[in-house]
Amino acid sequence: MYCTIDSVENTPPLACHRCGAIDQHRVTVGTGPYAYRANCPHCKAFLRWVSRYTPAERTARRQQARFQAMARKLPSAMQLAYLKSLGHTGPEPANMAEASQQIEALNNGRVA
Image (cartoon, rainbow, N blue to C red):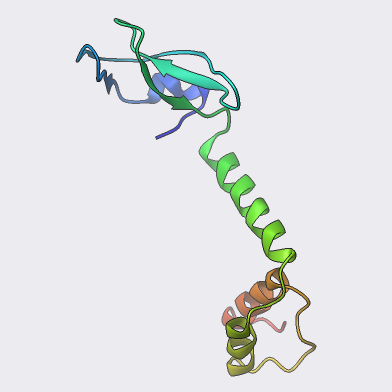
């Protein structure tokens, strides 16, 4: 479970694996690629990493990265076969991302 530094107050208390205390965690600066870390307020033990992004921002970033990765690959044979079964008659998509968009458009009743 990740949260942003601003929403730490809204998260449920965490149980410490070292001392067993169940309390609201303290957030400190993380190390390396991690923005923040949650620590036990009693024994200072590490509890979990805390994200700098909100859940909506993380979802958007994940979708963007997924789309960029798909844009670098050729459409799969399964995608092309599915497009054909949906009645696609236009030009063949150039990459997986285009094929995915066309499939979504045909499934939602829009013309690709």
